Image (cartoon, rainbow, N blue to C red):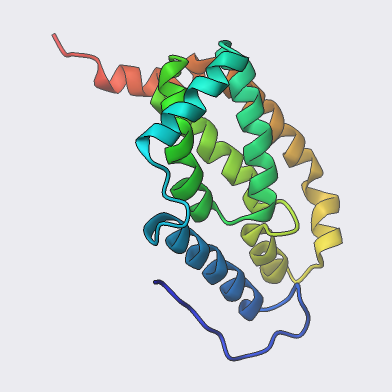
Length: 178
């Protein structure tokens, strides 16, 4: 199991490397336990059952992706990105395949959602790092970042609704040459 301990106490709960290191280590510890010690190691049958259940509720990929966006945005605010990728992406991939969603498109959506989570309280590690580097408090950071949140969410909606945005470059790079 990966483990990381910091023996310096931080000045308060939202300041210092001790908080960041402890929160990051907790996320990695939880993901490693869940994925490798069998506490939450879904079988192929469980993944297929989840996919069948989701497809029975909706066969529209956009509805599924909208739900995934909301789930990822919520989880990104509360959990580190590594545990989300290690635990939830393998659970969701069979559903992605059953709905005919391009895995590259889904990967871009996943990463973009988690990027937003990195600058969102209460867990956003990038937010804490920027606050420390800029020597500003979290409330002051939020006062300046909200226009960027709007742009990020609008971009996420565009990427989700129009897969060509995220698939154009991979399709160009992977096209057979003449």
